Amino acid sequence: MSALLLMLPFFSFIISLTDQTSFYNELSTRQFFHFLADEIHQSTSIIAKDNKFVLEQMNGETVTIEKYSQIIRRLVGGKGHEVMLRDVRQINIAEQPYGFHIRITLVEGDIYEKTISNYK
Image (cartoon, rainbow, N blue to C red; front, side, top):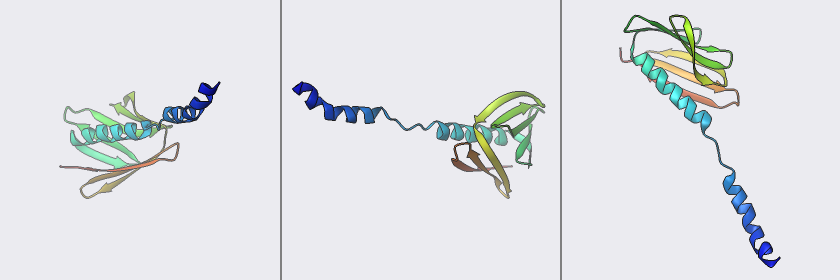
């Protein structure tokens, strides 16, 4: 009994160690920005309007990146449905003289922003 009473304060410490913070949203959004930057840098023509990108690739294919329901998806030639980011409430794209400023608001309320330069 006395051994159990001596170990009791350590149980709360051990339980607090198991409560880990999740960085899933931050990591998935950073990865999305990375993939988006690659798509933009590999494009010969970029149109950003209505908060979506229409990219003409070097091989002649047209890639569309847009919000659809609560995801951001990638379409090639208007076909397919590759999910790039989930749980998205809103995406705002602002064209800058040197590239694009993207602001993403997730369902949980987290806001992520990135400016992607266009070297063309």
